[in-house]
Structure formats: structure tokens, C-alpha cells
Length: 272
Image (tube, rainbow, N blue to C red):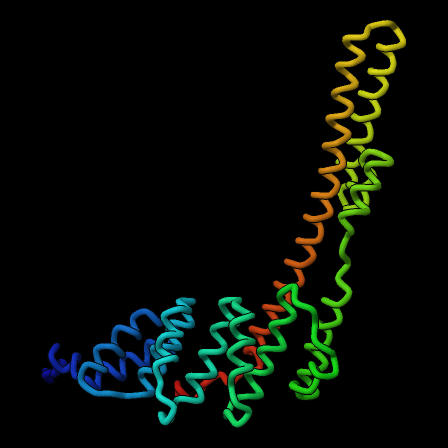
């Protein structure tokens, strides 16, 4: 019977083998264990590529603050400095710290290798917050023809989001109880509010006419209470409607950007 020589446990923990295993884990999206192998490898040998992969692994795990510390630590003369600074800016975007992203991009010189990419991210960030959109012509400049058509679609959607006016919703319900809720898309609640307010108003009137002052004032108070609540509820309904529209828009935009990898390099060569 042939004798099979098994690798000794000590050999498995040699720096070269730890690096190979870490790369395998990284490319298999097992980022937590990859980080452990990479960090153990770095105890024996400095390697900028491995250090960069650790930052990317933390980014993939959505530990954005830790990842940003890794990318911020690269000196300017390092070969990975441009990519590290690109990821540093990208993390502001992923953390939804859009003002910080724009401020950092504004401080970055135009001779930076990935300046068009971070400038593009800066423009995309306007599609997510309540800041006024920049001019569409300036917006288009930073995207190629295929990307330009796709992103301008979202620019136009945001510019014309079907929002409901809170003032109009309140005024409509002040004139006819429940009408503001119908305007905000809550037809069932609007009809219910109209019936309840109408019924309470009728009971107040009927009791006053019958000489039952106490019950008349009681139902009058209830009518006023539900009338005011109906106005407030209509404004709230319009606000909820607007939030749903914004949330749906942002979710669709986020999925699109993820598919496009935010128009940034994807570093596939790190797994070759």
C-alpha cells in the first residue's frame, strides 16, 4: 500500500500558505476569515496589496469606518495611494456622508489619477439628499454616453418626484373632512373621517335642537377634536406618501449603482 504524506500542521501556518489561503477566502467572499489570515501574514512581511485587500474586506462587510482608516493610512508615494484615496472617498458615499464627500472632493487636486471618478460620485450624491440639484449640463459632463443616459434618467425623476403638498392636504381636509387623506392616497381613511365627522356634527346639531345642551356640547367637542385630528392626519398622510416615494426612488437608484459598481473600478485583477 502506498504511503500518503500529509502536510504537517506547522507548514499550514507558514506565511506563504497563509497568504494563499487568505487570497482564496477573499475571492470566495469569506472576508472575516480572510482578514485574519492576511493580518497573520503581515506579522511576517509587509505587503501593500494585502493591506489594501484588508481595507476592501472591511468595506465589503460594511464596516466602513474601519475600512476608511486603512485607506487613509497610505502615504502619497505608495503605489496603492490613488486606489486607497478613491476608496476613501467612496466610503463617505457609502456612509451617506454626502457633505463630507463633496468637501473632500473640492479639496482634491484635478491632477489626482481618479479625480473624474470621485467627481462623478460627488455629483451622484446630489440624487440622494435634499440639496438642490446642480445644472444638468454640468452633471452630464462626468459620465460617458451609456452611463449618461442612465444617470440622467434618475436626475429627471428626482427633479419631478410626484410629491403631495402638506399645505394642500391640510386645507382640503379643513374644507371637507377626509378629503386631504384621499388626496394623499388614503381613500379608505378619508371616507371614514368624512363619515365620523359628519355623524358627530349631526349628533351635536340634533341634540342642541332637542334642547339637550350637555350632549350637544359633548358632541360639539368631539366634532372639533376629530376635525382637528383629521387635518393633522391629512398632513401626516401626505408626509408619509412623500417619504414612500423618496424611499422607493432611493432604493431603485441604489440597486442601479450597485449593478454599475458606482461607475468605479472593481479590482477584479486582485483575484487573478
